[in-house]
Amino acid sequence: MDDQRLEEITGQLVDIVAAAGSVILEVYETNFDVQTKSDDSPLTVADLSAHKVIDAGLQELTPDIPIISEESVPPSYAVRSQWQRYWLVDPLDGTKEFVNRNGEFTVNIALIEGDTPIFGIVGVPFQGKIYVGNARKGEAYLLHEGVRTDLKPQLREADEASLVVVASRNHGGDRLEAYLSELGNRFSDCTRTPVGSSLKLCVLAENKADIYPRLGLTSEWDIGAAQAVLVAAGGGVFTEDGEPLRYNTKESFLNPEFLAVADREFPWLDRLPSFPAKD
Image (cartoon, rainbow, N blue to C red; front, side):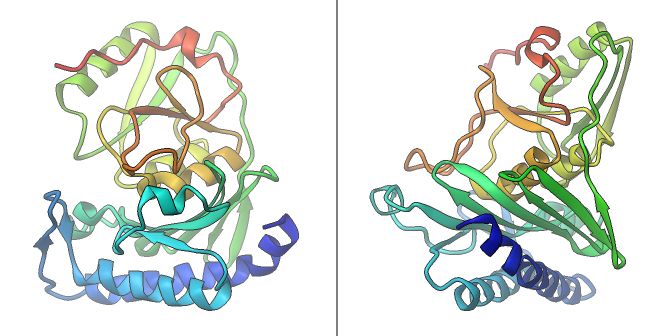
């Protein structure tokens, strides 16, 4: 899909994300039930309702582009490995945040071409925010209460001693704590900001934090849209060896551990410690 076509349908994609956010908030205000999926993650009617809104909207808007959603049964890798492009959807990322009612849950739609997220929209229904990013054009912006704010790169100084780390509220454990401790040894002014869901990458895109070390499992739909927004804003998402995080390269949808950064030009691998070894 070329950038002109993406630009033509961006408004409709934003509307789809907003509509999904609306049905999520309707459930949020009720005494909803919580189920447990096979991987022990929570599931609510909000996840399923948002999935239906997004799936119907995308099928109507781009009937020729296949869709992978967390709440659908994906085709085998033998099938999807032949796709040139597809929509990657997480209708409600941060279901734990949703259940705990802290507002830090998101709606995510990414367009993957080859093995790369080239476009993404992340809605934050409780905050009334929608992030949009075209990674191919290097254009990202935030929509909030009818106002558009462009998200631009802010380059770090080579010897900058401050570091703001965004981290998960629910994941990481001892290895993350050890990593954060080592960061404190290397940066004299190191602070930690806990944030839930794919919103962590959007915080980086807004330059409200510097890095997000993800020690632990995620799935491709968890971060695909936010990765596109972050890259469009001048950031990056890398594996431990410094390679960009890739998509649709294997049967499993699980990601390797990764590091997300607000300024991809900064020599992070020279300044940061290695991830702690797994037990």
